[in-house]
Amino acid sequence: MTHQPIPDGPDRTPGPPKPSSANGTRPSPGLLVAHENPALNPTVRQAVDLDGGQRVVDLDAAERAAADFLAALGIDLDREDRRATPARMAHAYAELLAAEPFRLTTFRNDEGYDELVLARAIPFRTLCEHHMLLFSGVAHVGYLPGERILGLSKLARLVEHFAARPQTQERLTMQVAKCLDANLRPRGVGVVMEAEHTCMTQRGVRALGATTVTSALLGTLRTDPRSRAEFFALARVPSPAAG
Ligand SMILES: [Zn+2]
Image 1 (tube, rainbow, N blue to C red):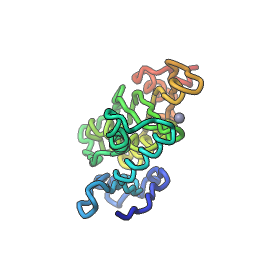
Image 2 (tube, rainbow, N blue to C red):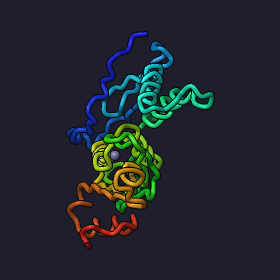
Image 3 (cartoon, rainbow, N blue to C red):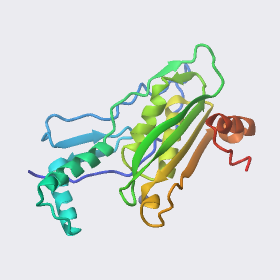
Image 4 (cartoon, rainbow, N blue to C red):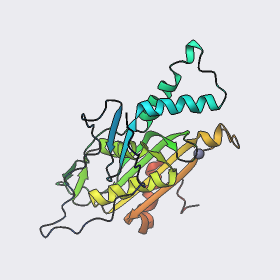
């Protein structure tokens, strides 16, 4: 089998919102974010990211590499219980890096709802790009609606989508905020993430129980102190502004 290079392009966040059409704001029609290409070898999967990046997943190659990696660490793979470990490792990492397809469905804000919409404590897990170890926690994602509102499950889908790649918590937080801003054009966006990084709690300094908090605020939630305070209060996170 030939192996294609893996163009796991830079983690680009969506660009700034495009200009509105003459008859009003018209968000993009929805983003299809992953598909399988049946023409490829079944163990080679192609994922298309929401932001256009492409990755080729070759499970056979990943399994061979996992076997080499473990052998290089002196781990005996000839034991009965460990024969399938490289394959399990390859599948486990592929699963951690696989985003489900979804569309960022939006609806007209017919009722003119103008208060904060907030999804609290969305669980997520991802891999830190520095160690390829898990970090996990919760995300609080909110927005102040403009002309469109979003299907509520999409806030969780958005977090899940950007978590399915090697990440830093700072970038993940910004990507969720910017994608929401670019596709929904709300008056404001707020994202707070609280996570435990196993590369920090289980190795290195072993700071057990330490969590990392990041936040991204855009639009009114960034510029208006009252909106900002309300967002942090509803997310039940101490406001950095309030000290
Ligand atoms: Zn790390």
